[in-house]
Length: 373
Ligand code: HEM
Ligand SMILES: [Ca+2]
Image 1 (tube, rainbow, N blue to C red):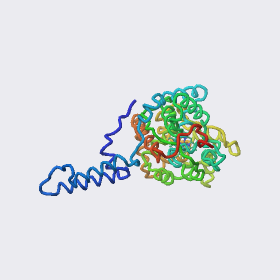
Image 2: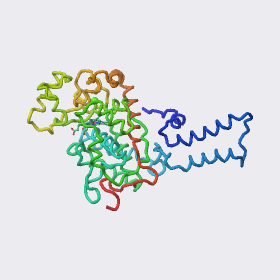
Image 3: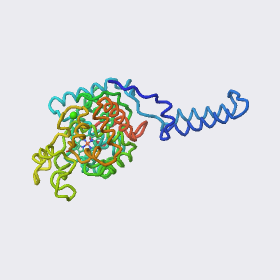
Image 4: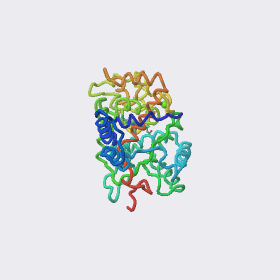
């Protein structure tokens, strides 16, 4: 399935956050000024008006801050990058049914910290004193780094020093979703790799699974994502696993009540209590979507309607009184196409979080370390 980009030009320049908003307003000002005069002469060469418009246009062309990610970024330098990435993910999937989920999560954990700059992939050592890999949300949890390295090697073999690790994470997420039965889309590319990691940023910016909907919403808002993005992207919990330690606070003594979380379906609760006994290993794995654990579909939302969300933050999307997220969950539960379309748009939104572009950062040759270190 392909999702054509919306009529971009008008929406982009009307968008106050767009880097070309200010020059656009300037241009409007000059046009208004010229229209307000009784006789509207066309600007001729060497007239002051011509220079004003000319200056604005030159500014637009030269201002690097309006450069953006594009789906054609590697069409000349690495035209088959998408299929190279896809092939390696497909290979890995043959031995590990979970890998597509794990790779999708890596892009999320990268983008929420310093933007989508592959900061997550840097190993601790040398100038990297505190890696993101060792941050609480990632340590003994984030996985798939070995497959990212395989993808990078395969891409470097065809197109050395051209494709960033940040773009590889975005491409791997798309390949993962579509190989698991979800939508396909044109990934926007042109990100460059950062030179630093931000462990404390990872600890604070990535939502944790026991916080309130208000908190999670605020953490999404902090990176420019709204409530619809939150619900759509949470739908990624349609595949992959969660360890007991991330939700066992719900099972026996929820918030000091001495009882389980009341928004847990009783049959589902019994299964989870059995799989995650008190004083058992917190590392035992559970399917995030018990109804279709490896398929990218809208069952995640159907589960929420039945009080079968695994994480507290999952169930909160549907069970928080009066929340704006409830109607979105209902819509996605009843309409998989609506979910897929929203998911694609929100993945693009997430992939656009403060990318490094132009001459910022670098193209790492090894995703685990900054070049020359
Ligand atoms: C809304 C806030 C979110 C919270 C609190 C959250 C939390 C978690 C937690 C605790 C796990 C289990 C990790 C483990 O047991 O090791 C998990 C797994 C996962 N998350 Fe999220 N997540 C959120 C949003 C997202 C988003 C936006 C995506 C992607 C777009 C995503 C994709 C995944 C995937 C695919 C897995 C399974 C990974 C695997 O099996 O390796 N999550 N998440
Ligand atoms: Ca599923």
